[in-house]
Figure 1: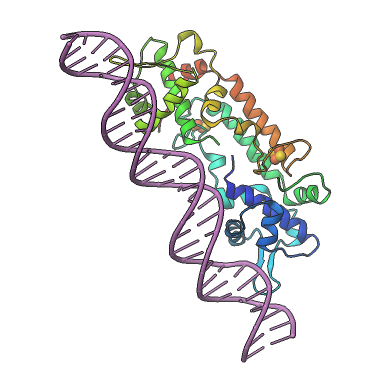
Figure 2 (figure 1 turned 90 degrees about the vertical axis):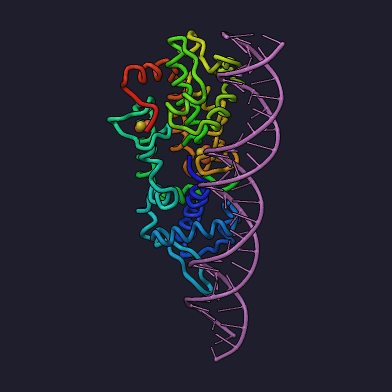
Length: 144
Length: 144
DNA sequence: TATAAATAGGATAAATTTATCCGAAATAAA
DNA sequence: TTTATTTCGGATAAATTTATCCTATTTATA
Ligand code: FES
Ligand code: FES
């Protein structure tokens, strides 16, 4: 469904959000340990999220990654997915035709579009805050 | 969503089904031209479908691939997807946790499961016949 | 200012997926 | 039986994704 990079990116963002509630910055080392991902690869993904203004990095000693407290509730999953995987998940043909088009549909277009749109809607209406709260309360998990 | 191999496999199966209605066998060459896919790679995927008893191969001169006429309506998309991509699309965690489990859910488990189950249902209730008829009638397309 | 700690980023490697090639085996037809 | 045609299957290559490593840059603090 999503690339590994995107999976790590989402999990990392949730972990950063959780810590940002308490004003705490976190490092790639801590992140990768808490979400069970390769450290250097995760760091690369974090850089991409920084470039897309979804998370903030503080360089130098006592630095780390953080998300503006009041941005946490406004960041939707779709923004993270688009920053890492692009928009092919929303617009791409389920059977790999070069373009997905009502006027030139593949055999599963109608059925596939319904599901693709629901996925899109889910990603557009799910924000980092609710996901981070789930982790904080112990209702959900970021590793294993 | 699906791997390239799976996309080719589904499109090839639909094309074979369409021809099998008329008792016509088709070759990897013809298939790859009609679905716009790499020939040798497509041939490999066809072999996998043969091993899974979803399509039949006739070896030797005047051979090719065919699907039993009365099997066309009984073959569901899910069988093709499982033969090529396995079942990770049905059971895998959306955020890449090793196991997707109600008792150890990732933050998006509840929302993701809904969509994953709908995709599963769609693949389980869509058969090759209806898809092949769409191609035959010109309502849908297998390439470009 | 010097030092230590941390992110940024380029180069590279490993793993996986996608794709190609070629000879072996099977089979219909001459 | 020979030939032509076609699938089968192993080996290999190319492309992409995933992952690691090392150095430069930034910055707080002593
Ligand atoms: S054309 Fe295939 S999903 Fe739209
Ligand atoms: S645990 Fe992640 S989708 Fe079920």
